[in-house]
Image 1 (tube, helix red, strand yellow):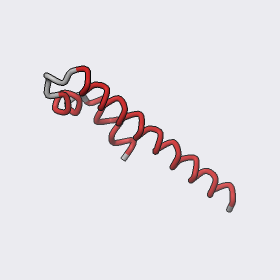
Image 2 (spheres, rainbow, N blue to C red):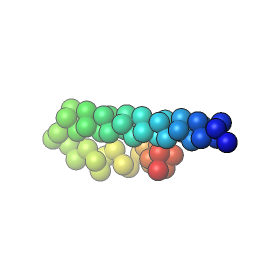
Image 3 (cartoon, rainbow, N blue to C red):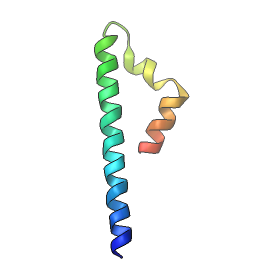
Image 4 (tube, helix red, strand yellow):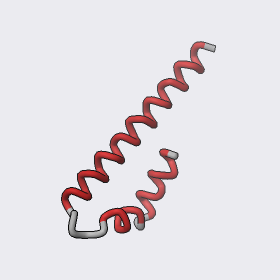
Length: 56
């Protein structure tokens, strides 16, 4: 019982850090290329879609 609870907590922490990393990368990218429509560019590649799918 306690082991599964610890696993769930670790998974939640991993998901949280992944979301934070994605957010930092997105904000950094939008800061770097503020003249380019960054969001549209970033959500097009299948790699980022895969990352978002794994996070969500």
